[in-house]
Image 1 (tube, rainbow, N blue to C red):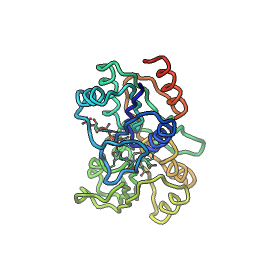
Image 2 (cartoon, rainbow, N blue to C red):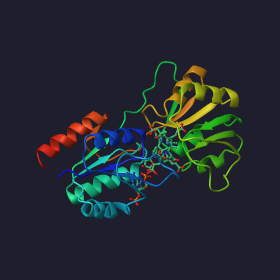
Image 3 (cartoon, rainbow, N blue to C red):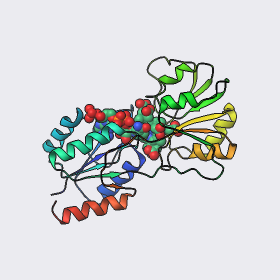
Image 4 (cartoon, rainbow, N blue to C red):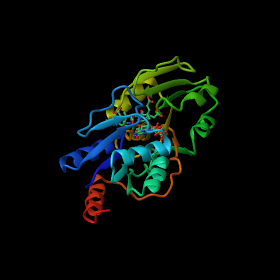
Length: 248
Ligand code: 3Y8
Ligand code: NAP
């Protein structure tokens, strides 16, 4: 009997949850508990960490999970690594639903960097207005460059004072091209710092930067362990039905 665990937290994971619910497949949706009010899902939902690899393995056993779909974000590296290890430990089929990275298009002015620290160093020394579109968890290193005027965008209002002066936008996205153009023009943004999330939900800022001729410091994705990987909900549903027919 199929029982799927969806490691969620992205718009792709929400689309998958709809397809799984529509197909009447028994499944559990999981959020990491990063935001105050995550979007409702059409499946039974759990919120919060599992307690590392062993915690996830215990959940797989206790919940009689037969298939795990890692539909987390490409930067949710620890969750993805834990899923590979826990599925190996419990001999549970695993597939990743992961959108392709954004590719540089004609007119893009990207400075590609490996991580947040390299992004800080890549910024100009001269004071500038900078849009940090990388969420809340990884902005501390920018305190080393207090000469800039930062605009931050979080899903929820900050709980603690920021480490450096910044204008705050609280919005969960997905974002629109018109909205990004208006925001960047109104704030005189000169640089954007982004992660190569891929997908449509955060793409608008990249397109807006190209239209405005602005440089984007693009943080590359972390390395993830090898695992079966698809880019569409359809392929996940085929995998689920195929492996269910085979009784794996
Ligand atoms: C909790 C679930 C939907 C889902 C919306 C997508 C799009 C907007 C792009 C910018 C970039 C950023 C951030 C972002 C994107 C979608 C999608 C996507 C980037 C929610 C969600 C959860 C999270 C967690 C949150 C992180 C933060 C990252 C904001 C829900 C809304 C910057 C990633 O405050 C915090 O601690 C937020 C943490 C992880 C990265 C960070 O380090 O701060 N996402 N985002 C999930 C959980 O608890 O398991 O609340 O409903 C999901 C979405 N985030 O409804 O359509 O294609 O997925 N999310 C990045 O760098 O790309 C925003 O502002 O332009
Ligand atoms: P992360 O750093 O890879 O994970 C850190 C820990 O958070 C994991 O080890 C796990 O805790 C817990 N966790 C993460 N995702 C979980 C999930 N879906 N269900 C249960 N526990 C989860 O993760 P992150 O980058 O903070 O992302 C957290 C969530 O936000 C994920 O759902 C992700 O899809 C979503 N999200 C992240 C980004 C991003 O930029 N990282 C963007 C959009 C959405 P334990 O070790 O205790 O099990």
